[in-house]
Length: 341
Ligand code: ADE
Ligand code: ZN
Image 1 (cartoon, helix red, strand yellow):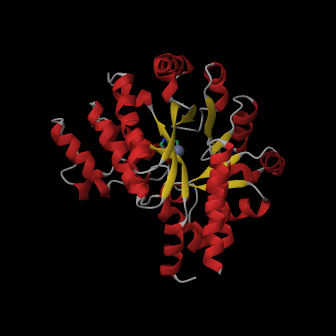
Image 2 (cartoon, helix red, strand yellow):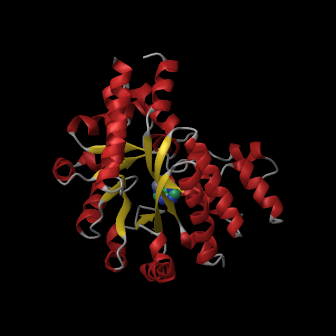
Image 3 (cartoon, helix red, strand yellow):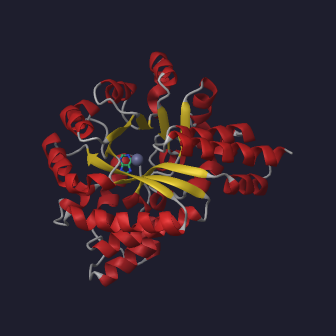
């Protein structure tokens, strides 16, 4: 397929984004703008010099910079502007449903109240629902480099806002911080009615994916690249219809894979795994949803059927109700039928 045709097709697909850290959508231009109004001096003298620092050898090198960037966010308006900028961007890419992560501890540990963070994010999500027709779910993520006790404090702080939060996740430094470290807080989160997901098998081994399923009882795995190391695990993912939210440009940027041709998503689709594509931290990794679809499709020679399957899988493993899922899936199918006629 020609590049321009492929781009046009991808643009037109109604898409769901299920793996997006709102702090990772913080574009350098907005970071400088908010830093200025908050009287914060960044360590970089221009957008260009900041962007030059976006070279990572692994997850930790990225996280170090990502947490520094987030320090600019102080007020409700900052969280609102961050979230609104993301939603406007993905609206332009025909994303119609988002499930957004936020990392409360990144902010509460700096003395920013939980409610300041969530009010800003929530108001922007509601505005997008009304004005852009984007539906959403909100996922609070525990930072796995911190203790389970600290995650419990975050769970406690979230309870007054329970009606705004759909689920909990687990992110940050994976190696050495297995899912089982958070067994009790995931159980307590489920008892509060939260749905469960966890990052697993990004840099960590397939064993962490087993733990996320068997010990934390998550419904979906973020990344999950390493599942292909374990044939029994692959069968389990297929049988239980566990979605994997893959992030190809993130995997390249963090050297989880060396080149896009090595990305496991095509193998996963061929095996019948419910693999999907998302952007993770688009401001840091060079692309939003369309760019992730495009770079993956180009490198792996994906055809229209693969693209359709990726889009359908995302709605299938989303947290939308069954009727809304069906409606979106039909729209994707109709879109592709119209393309081939
Ligand atoms: N936080 C933001 N992006 C992340 C990623 N790709 N893995 C783990 N934690 C993250
Ligand atoms: Zn992530």
